[in-house]
Length: 110
Length: 122
View 1 (cartoon, each protein chain N blue to C red):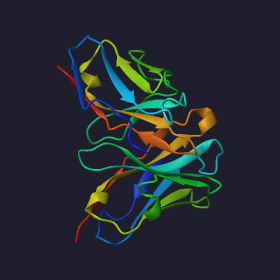
View 2: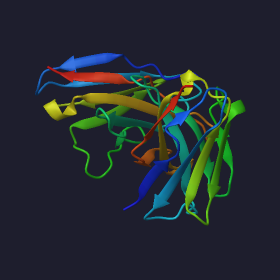
View 3: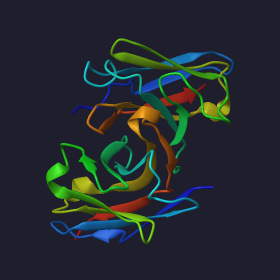
View 4: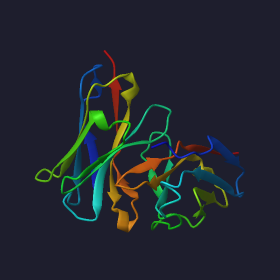
C-alpha cells in the first residue's frame, strides 16, 4: 500500500484557480469513487473539504470542487483567497476496509 | 456535536509500547455506519493511516504497521484505544483519532480529534 502521489507544492494569486492532482493505482483511486480531500492549517486537525470524489460537505465553499479520471483525482480551488493557504491531502478507499492518504500538497497564495 | 479527544503519554521510550485513548462524546461509538480510526503525522510530514475499527470489533490495519498495532474499542466508556509496540524515533508524530463513514456511505473521515504529540526518546 503506497501513498497516493500529490505535488509537493502549488501556488496561485488571489482570484485565480489552482488544481491539485492525486495519483493512485487501479487498486485504490481507480477502483472506487471514494476519494476525499482534506484541508489542514498549521497546528490544526484536517478538515473534510470533498468526499466521494466531488461532493461538498455542508458549509464548504462552492469554490472547492473535485473530479476523477482513471487513477487520478483532482481538487480545484477557484477564486483563490488568502485563507485557502494550507496543506491539502487526498485520501482513497483501497478495499478491505483500508484507506490510503496522499503525501500532501502545500498551497501558497501569492 | 460529536467530539473526539485523544489522551496518553507525550513521551515514550524506544522499544516500549505507545498507548493512546480517544474519548468520544456527543455520540455513540456503537453506532453502525461508522468506523473509528487512528491517523498519525510525523513533524513536517504527511498523514498516515494507522488502522480502523468497527464498533463490532472488526479491525483493519496499515500493512506497514500491522505487526505492531492493536486498536480496540470499549463501548461502555465510549472510547477507542491504540497500542503501538516496539516504537522507535520514526514513530514520533501527532496522533489523531477520527471517525470514518463506512464504505457504502462514502468512506470519508468527517470528525477528527485535535491530535496529540507523542515523542519517542530516551
